[in-house]
Each structure stands twice: as structure tokens, then as C-alpha cells.
Image (tube, rainbow, N blue to C red; front, top):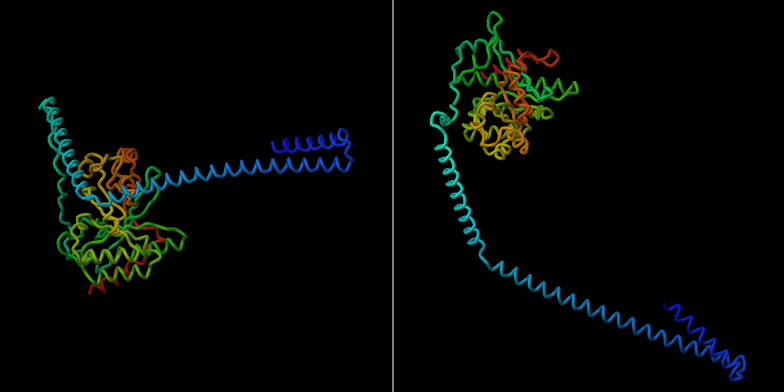
Length: 405
């Protein structure tokens, strides 16, 4: 637009010069001067007009910006006023009201559920009503068949063997880790399982020796596996007798501290009932084992309604449940749907291990329920460790016996 205006001014100046030369008989210099003066005046007039327009647009933009700033300032004042009002209010009373409303709502929902249940019971014939489910009774403890004195003599004769039983992944059935299973070698080549010789009441010295021998075997296996470029997870049995005895506990700690590179491969397997019964001193001992890198797995868990986050804080990384209870009566273990249990525990970094698997049908059901780890006689039985990973067992048992003495 400006180019057109300037072109018009130049053409008009040429016209003025031509008119002065031909019509008014001006000399060429005078006609050129007249044209130049006319062009200068025209350009100055146009520049002044354009500058006024620019100033007017700038003033309008400044006015618009001022209005916006005033609006923002007003909004900020209103927001500040509301914040001050909220700060002056007592939120505790409102929270109490909300909590009361939630409590009332929960009561109403419970009453509705009870009413619906009563209606369903009235519609169901009495003969077909299922009997109310009772809580799962605690498994009855069976006393070992081998007397403690005979066990002590067998330990003195170095007839304790620590075998391994794999924990497998599903559905690939690859080895996830190994349980260290102490077994007693009897006369005639017979083998006694832990439930046959480990005392239930008393016999703490026997349990301490067995725990120590299992740990030494685990360290030997983990060390030789590491030298072969492999890593293994070893579930080592542990009892309250070891946690309660200062000397045995210090031996466990010194063994783990001397092998910190493989301490993370050691998972102490403790019965859930023993874990719940730990006293303060025993829990302190368990915490010391966790601080040197070891973790815990709870066996024979009867309920998964525990505070999982609290268990993780105490070093628990695996929970074991019986396959029969888990598949036939999951309500005795948890309020979750059976297919959600493993994924729920995995959120906390806790593995669910289903033990006692005795049939292929159970494996298929576990796979459908999302269970990744299983163990049982149908998958693999305890057996001696490979010769390249076996430790010098007699020397280890002798050291433990001298320490006990």
C-alpha cells in the first residue's frame, strides 16, 4: 500500500514539473525544483499520516493490555480472597462430617447386603443350603518318629545330608531356585525326611546344627555356581532356635558377611507360624540377617490377609501356600479372587510360591490363575546336588558340632 502511495506522489511531482515547464514557461531547473519540492511535501504529509496511524494503533494496544492487566489483577484479588477464606475455615469439622456420612453409607450398604442375603436364603431350599464354612484348622503337628538322642548320634556321625528340591516357573518349568532339604541317612540306606527327625518341642541344639549345616551348604553351592558364571536362588531353612541363640545367630551373620557377594542369593525359609511368634530379640536377629543382604520366605502360610507392605519392610520376599488349600478353598487364604492374588503380591515385589503340587491338573489350574512359581512331588523331589556344586559336608558338620560344644 505504501509503495502505491509513493508511486502516486512521484507521478504527481512529475506532472507538476511538466506543467510548470510547458504551461508556465519555467526553465528546466525551475520546473525540476518545483517537482522536487512538491514530491518532498507529499512524502512528508504521507509519513506524518502513517506515523499518526501507528501511534493510534500503539495507544489502542496499550489500552487493551491495561484492561487485561486490570482483569488479571481483579482475578488474582478474588483468588487471594478465596484462599484466605479457605485458610480461615476449619477443615477438621468438614472431614468429620464426611467421615460420618461415609460411616452411615457403609452401614446402609451392609444392611442392604444382609437383607439381600436373607432373601436369597429364604428362596433357597433348606436341603440345598451349604453349611457355613469354618476357618481352616491349624494342621496338627505330628511328632517325629526318630528320638532326639538318635538324631544327635546321627549328627555326630556326620549322617546329615542336605539335598535340593527345585522351585520351578510355570508354564516353562524352568528352575527358579532350590530348597535346601536336610535329610538324615539311616542304617540300611534309608533316608529320613525333616518331619521325621526334627523335634517339634525342645531339641533346639538339633535345629541349630541343621540350620547351620544348611547355610554352609547353600554358601558352597552359591559360590561354586558363581565361579561357573551362574546365579542361583537358595531357600535355606531357618528356625527360631537359631534366631534366639546369640552364638548361632553370630555364626550366620559372620558366614553371610564373609560372602556378601552371594548373600543376596540366600533366602531364609521360616514357617509362617514361627514368624508370627517371633519375640523382640528374635526379630532383631532377623533384621540383622536382612542388613547383610539376606531375605525371608514364609512357608505354610495360612492367610494372605496380612499387611504385605509391612512384611516387605521386614525383608519378606516370598510367601508359600499349599496347593490343596489354594485351589480348593481360596477363601480360607484371601478375600481376593484367586486369579488376582499373584499379581497383587507382585506389586509389592513378593513372590507367591504354591507348594505340594501333586498332580498335572493342579498345574493347569495354577497356570490359569496366573501363578508363576510352584513346587511339589509331581514337579521334582529332593535329590542330592550335582557333584560339581556339592560341598565338603563332613567338615562343615564337624565345625558346627564343635561350635555347639
